[in-house]
Each structure stands twice: as structure tokens, then as C-alpha cells.
Length: 372
Image 1 (cartoon, one colour):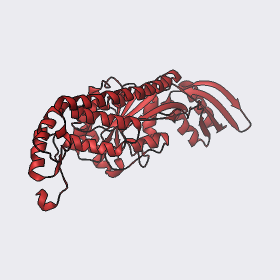
Image 2 (image 1 turned 45 degrees about the vertical axis):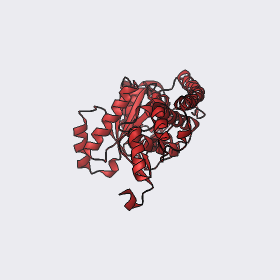
Image 3 (image 1 turned 90 degrees about the horizontal axis):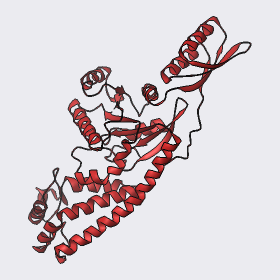
Image 4 (image 1 turned 180 degrees about the horizontal axis):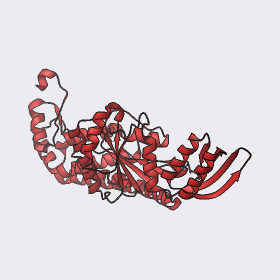
């Protein structure tokens, strides 16, 4: 088949033993790669940061270390694609060469991780709430990250567009919140790669909230499978103790009936289901209110509205539901400064809008220089 198709490489969707790779290469005269090596190739093409490149190199050399003895033995029997140059090595010499590479990369990663830890400590010291975006690869995490923060990050339909974390600050009802975009999950991610990317994945452990982004436009079986994969990965890195909102993304690709049907079925997996379209910003305000209710106790706000019987009645309602600091009366308008829970602040905002007034969140300094 490979000969008839004029194939240059044969890819298997499962992990192969070194002996299988060697024998298949011998039979076909072509390079053989398995699932692990395919994922590694994609990762290598996608890696843009120093840390991501080092993590991929570490995974590759760890794989070599685990299979060094067998690869050298087979290479001595006759060179095959994927085994070139290994025949000149003695096993012990090659293993030591690989071990040195692994140690060198681990030292470099330690330095990078120290920098990451400094960033993390700095963020903790400032005291801003933190949110991590998690989810299966290509679920729309980076699109949601852009919608929440306004930050331009690489977005396309390819796998593993994000291989390193990006943290930016966003304004959530006047309060600064840090949002982190993380590497996407995948079914049966090889253990070597999980270990290599552990420090990146562990950003989710230190979050106050995880937004688990799910592509709800897919078939229900795919949604369920990918959700299980994500929850298993979060469990493996110890992040299931963090509150999780399941964000059902890409609702613009579904009819209302399809969406409602999927939401009913998914309630057995999560009680915090929030349907959105990150691309078209649908229901983004609803998501922000739910985030704020968990992360922020009170938000400071001020309103200006025309003086009328309706506005005075509404002012009485505000006194009952918020902490009013100051009320200033003018000839035609009154101004109110107050703090309230985010959900109450949102109700006040809508009420003031209906009365022809203006609403303003009193934002704290957002420290836009915080980046990692």
C-alpha cells in the first residue's frame, strides 16, 4: 500500500515497540513513526517559547533513554530509517550520552521554572484572583482567552496552538483578575509528555478557578470522551480541588434545541454548565458574572440617574441590597457610590440603564505590566 501510494512516511495511531518500528522500516524502506512520535513532531512545530522547546527535547531524550539498549542492538543488525547512525555506538556509551542530554535539559528547565515561580509569587503577593483555562486541544481556549483579556494569542483550528502558558490581567467588574491560557489536553497523552509538561499543566493547581472549555458543537460521544480525558488529566496533576466551571463553547454552531438537549445530558457530569460563543462573545457577560460571584466578594461602583419617583424607589432598593457610601443630589440628577456583590451590581446596572442613567465600575489599578 505504501509503495502504491508513493508514501514517504508511515504513521501508526498507536504506540509501537522499537522492534516493530525496526521490522516495519526494514519491510517498507520507509520511516515509521507511532502516535508518540507524531505528537512530538506536532509539538516541535508548534513550540514557540524556550520552555516549550526544552520540554519537548526532554520528552524526546527520555524516550531515547528508555529504548536505547534495544535501538542500538537493532541498529547493529543493519541501518534502517529512524535508526541511522546508531550502529556505531556501544549501548553503555549511547546511554551515557543520552543521560547527559537529559540532565542538561533538566538544569535549563529548572532555571526557567524558577522564573515561573517568581512570577507566580509576585502574582500571589499582589493578591489578584487567578483563573486558568483548561480543555481539550482545539476546544477554543485561546479564543476565550482573547475574549476575556483582549490579548492577541495564536488562534487557529490546528492542534496544540498553545504549548506554553500565557498570563494576562483582565478587568472583571472593576476588579483585576489574572487569566492563564494553558496547553490543551489530548486522549492518551504519552506519560513522557505529561511528565515533560507537568510544570506547565500545574499552573491550573494554583488557580482560584478553572474554566474547563468544551467544544459543544461536536457529537455527544466526543464531548463526553474529551470531558473525561480533561477531568482525568486534572485529577492526575492534583487540580480537582479547584472550583471548575464547564464552559460549553461554540454554541453558534448549534440550534437552540440541540444545545438544550446536550446541556440536559451533560448535567450528570457537571452542575456548573455555562453555554457561550467565545468567537461571537455570546453569553460572555453571564460567564463573567458567575466568575465574579466566585472570585470577588464586592465591587465598587457609582451611578448617576435622573431624579424621579421611579429612581427614588430604585434608590431605596439599592439601600436594601448594597452598601451605599454616598448619595449626592443635584438639580435634576442624583449620584450614588456603593459596593455590592457582582450579581447585585449587574442588576443595578440594568435598572439604571432602564431609568436613563449611567453606571460605572470603579476599577483598581490593573497592573498591565504583569506578563509571563
